[in-house]
Length: 68
Image (cartoon, rainbow, N blue to C red; front, side, top):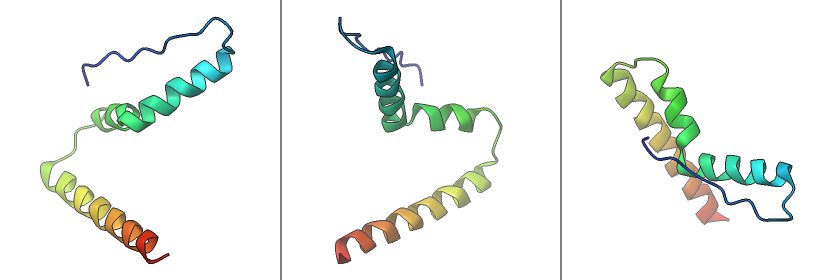
């Protein structure tokens, strides 16, 4: 979490595009999700349960992609 992320603004860049690029990069890196998680304390057992559910969901999604 201690990473400061920077976007280089090019001379002719539209400010909306720069903001969109920044948001896309932070989502990809998981920074937004991490900040939301750290807002409240979560018991370790609840965290394990949530992580297990997410892993199952990811696995099912990947299997569905492979079938197509």
